[in-house]
Length: 128
Image (cartoon, rainbow, N blue to C red; front, side, top):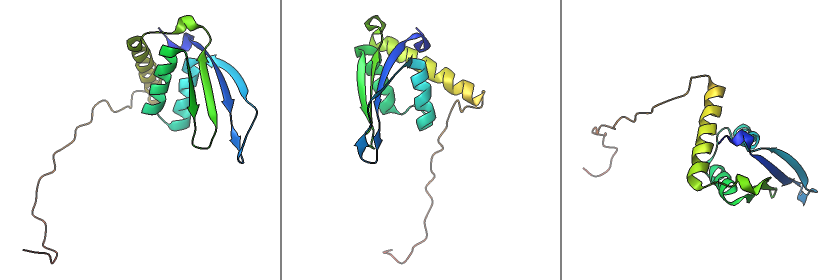
């Protein structure tokens, strides 16, 4: 399954100077929405990833933003609902390909944390 082939309907209500604007409705692919989140956040935060998984497994979600704006998303076709393991696999595959294409192979593949060695700290006037 490719999330670029899953159409979704997005209804957005923006908060402007303390007032909610009239809702705007757009249709796009789930892949396009994931790309928009990458652009907005610079990555795919866990909270957004979890919301997208709920969208793929339940069919609709609503995201409330800190500024009071909200966004409702729903699958265009209820037949696009999938099992959780399929949703995780599809989202991870798309996110990995999306990140890799933007970084053209210059992505960190492995991070190693070195242990901190204990060393004696100087006494700064405390107890001996």
